[in-house]
Length: 433
Image (cartoon, rainbow, N blue to C red; front, side, top):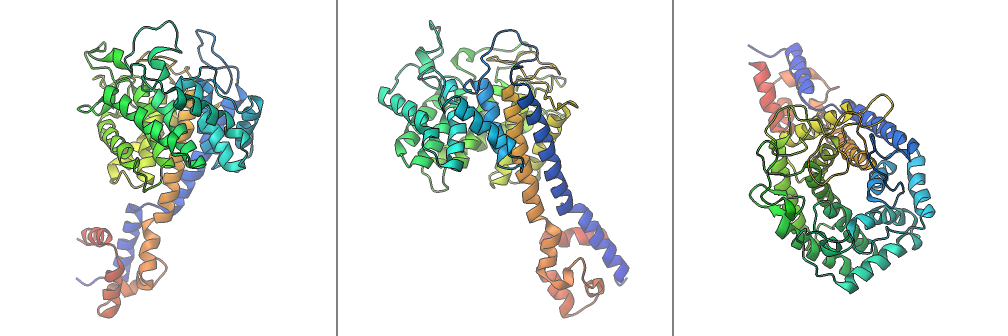
């Protein structure tokens, strides 16, 4: 039976429904931005309300890693929002604390703010913004700490293995700043130090069979309440997000890049099947129960990494996009009407109890990182959306073109087929059967 113009129009319309919509992607982009701004606004309006519920006094300033991680996420929002208050908040924090770092000279937690001050320097080119970062990192290189990476009891958290990166969280707090500083200054010593220390930590804490990181050496051989080996969600989230941030700074031809990229891909493949039906990841990643709490800090870091990997061409295939979308949906469900993000596990070193009223600035920082990557994904889909690509191939295949040309014979139909992507051709044939 010969095709009619109506049949061709219906077939093309069906194809449109099956392909990503540029308008839908743009709407999603705007919706993500609005959600990010709402969550950031809540956090900025509650600067002294660090934990819900709070159980101990926690430093409430931008040099503490709990809050500094929020500002790291805020840098990504500032780069995407037309509202100047987000960038202004970062600059104001820098000026308030004189672009300093935390007081402990070696601990990575205390130089997490380096990432934020380097961001400011990239925008303002004011050497004051990274002077303290350079001084701190130069002093660490000069001291060349050789302490064991094994977690052992110490009189305080400024000695022993804390002088190096002996816990998984440190791989977010430290190396992204070292790598970024190497790029903005051209000083290769910072990259070399990061590479050496990162490799040493990975050799100890990364399990190549599971393709995940132990939080620290004290968890070797430990089991959770349900018999699972303990691989902490947020602990691995710190690593995974840190890898994405390192790879963002590294040039494509950097000799350091293959090491970090391989780890990123290994962790990606491990994390994909561990995502739960509700889109979240459990606090204890190998917990076999289906009804674990929808913890948001680990989920946000993983969603960020997945979306970042898609955007940068490292994660190819619809399964990655589905996982990122499901992760983002789980995160947005955890935001209440006021903009407060819930279900953030409190400060800990292992999986713990979490509930809907729990929040922390670092959870919001992770949320903003995830939102930024999801925004970029929506924009990329808008740019690469397939229907306009069909139209650009030939006027004969244009949505606004002459559909009767699709039903004819001879050169016109041949030209149309020549420019039509193979997957579109196959889908159209199935629809016509």
